[in-house]
Amino acid sequence: DTGVSQDPRHKITKRGQNVTFRCDPISEHNRLYWYRQTLGQGPEFLTYFQNEAQLEKSRLLSDRFSAERPKGSFSTLEIQRTEQGDSAMYLCASSLAGVNNEQFFGPGTRLTVL
Amino acid sequence: QKEVEQNSGPLSVPEGAIASLNCTYSDRGSQSFFWYRQYSGKSPELIMSIYSNGDKEDGRFTAQLNKASQYVSLLIRDSQPSDSATYLCANRGNTPLVFGKGTRLSVIA
Image (cartoon, chains in turn blue, red):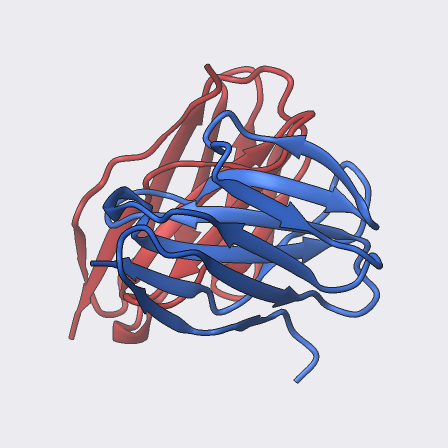
């Protein structure tokens, strides 16, 4: 399968714990995006990378959230000191650079904070 | 605030009918427009992209864009029960995608 992959698919954690998610984009795509989706809402942009550079972060991305893409390939999203409000589906997408880029999503990581 | 507005539905259509899904957006700088389909519990799947005014057809799907009216729509011909899903409209200007909340479509056999 040459699509976007994410790991883990599901994560249950207790409030206050740290969690880390991984995303592997489509191999030739140089842009990688993180979104968060809650029930009944569309995906909300969190941050994106072009190669290893983090080019934009949403105001939604609090200090507890950090993302990396160290070698311009896979990316990690870490949430420190999780809160119940962090419970959501975390989606990763990738694309080529360019104005008319098409973004393709991975299967998502569903996070539940107890 | 850049917004994308969609009727949340549910939109119910009989099998074989045409389903019409609509979307308006606020960002006049938007250059690219996308429709995603999302089944319950799954991630969004890209089904159509459109960049210029007019119609774009792909199989049973037709996307329509009117930049002057800031309006984009998706028509699904010969609707099938397997088309039952939430359809997300998204646009992109100088920032990554902005999504609407989606319209839930139910195709009744």
